[in-house]
Image (tube, rainbow, N blue to C red; front, side, top):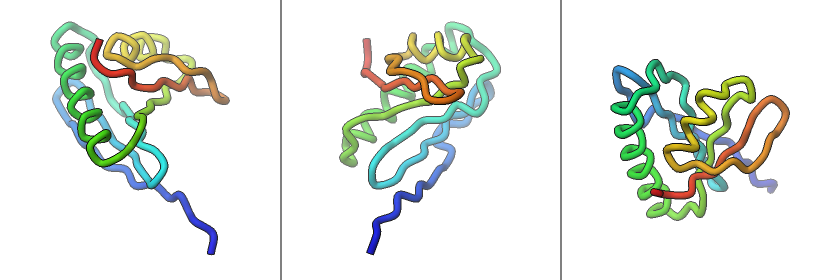
Length: 104
């Protein structure tokens, strides 16, 4: 029988200013940011703490990495995720791929 890698996705953080979804399966954990309405110091500080907490959880349940994909066109969000601890890995089709590197 061939193994499938269907994923599940749910909202893990939902604030007035942003939403974070976690998508996972038996191979990976990926964050999605379907909504970020502000890019200010308060959002930065809050999101940095929340992402670190999610990373701690992801490691505890056995994943070795956590990724996020951002549209190549959304340069503001790309810069923002790098500030909160994601490292640019490369591009795939219309997306830039980042891996979480932990707290800086």
